[in-house]
Structures are given as structure tokens and as C-alpha cells.
Image 1: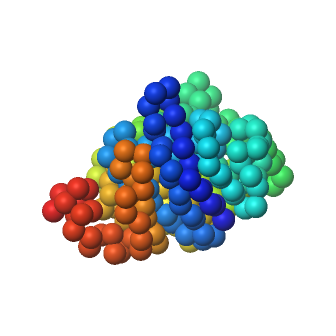
Image 2: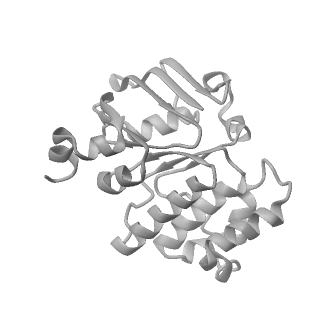
Image 3: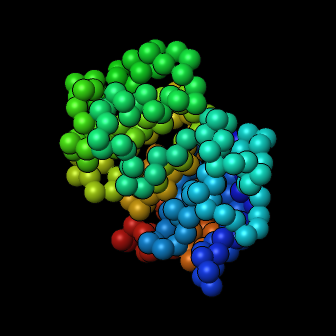
Length: 232
């Protein structure tokens, strides 16, 4: 479904991505793990056109994303839940969800009802300003907003950041459930253990280069991953 080949991204003299290649198959959860500054967020932002690649190719569902305007990429059913959530704080929960459906408003009421069934707390707070929600509720809203566009694939950037352990488990359960409904997920996450526990495959990114890749269960038992990311 998604193929990234030999991707290079520069920030001035800084080589942020140095030949990154990865694939995500239809129906998978694939994790991208690594330390702060490794290039994980840059990878997602380049896929969705928010950063410009110096070279390389990005193909999603047969579409060349490097030749696609960033504002049009979402119309191909590729959604992005960014780091920090980026909800609209002065709009209500329901207005935020409506914004998620702007590229495909067909059956909007039905889709919103499905989101409310998945996230009952959002239904309870649908008239509440999004900026007044808790961190966990804001993350649910960010995921719900992405689901409103009926995506084939969601890129998720640090969904557990700043959440309590109980909420982290809830968010990862939600990711697993969303995937079980047929939505493919590329997950960037610092909580390597949780990410690998729900993923099919994973890549380790170190200073802009993929250093390890493979089956997620294998990476959980890889001594290099254990030492660097699992505290073992």
C-alpha cells in the first residue's frame, strides 16, 4: 500500500533522512521506532507532503505522492494524526469531527455515529470546546477526526505522548481495534515495547537511516533493540 524508497530530506546542512526505505502492506500495523531526533516525525511529514524530499520516491496505493500537492494527499484516503494532536481548540468536538470529513462528506452522520460509538466520551463532550478536553480525550478526538475521512491508512505520530499509563493502554487498544476494522497504520512511537507488541512489522530509525527491520516479535527479542529501546 505504501512504498518509500531511498528517501533523503535535508534541513539546510543537516541530513535529516539518509536513504530511508520502508513498505507498509494493506492491513498491517507497522511501527517506526527510534530515539528523539532520529527522523521519525520527518518521515511521516515527508510522506504527507509537509516536508519536501531532496530525492527518493513515495508511492501510496499507486499514487506518486511526491508529485501530489500536500492539500490533495488526504483525498487519496491517507490520514495523518500528528504529534501534539493539532486539534482546533476553539471549536467544539463535533466541529472538529466535521472538519475531518470535509474531503468526503458522504454519509457524514453515519461516520460520526461510528466515531461516537468508538469514543463514547466524545459523544458526551460533543458540544464542549476541544481545547478544554483532557490529553487523552484530545488524542481520541485527533484519531476520531482522522476516521471521519474514511481513510485506507493512518499515519500516527507519538499517540501516547504525555498520557498516563492507563490512557496509554487505552490508546493502543484503540489502534488495534481500528486496524482490525481494515485500516492500515504506520505508527511512530517512543514507547517501543507497546508499539512492537501491537505491530506486525517494525523499523528502527537511527540518525536518519534504517538500522534494523523485521517482524515486530523478532525485534522485541533482538538484543540490540532490548538494550537501546526496551531498557534490558
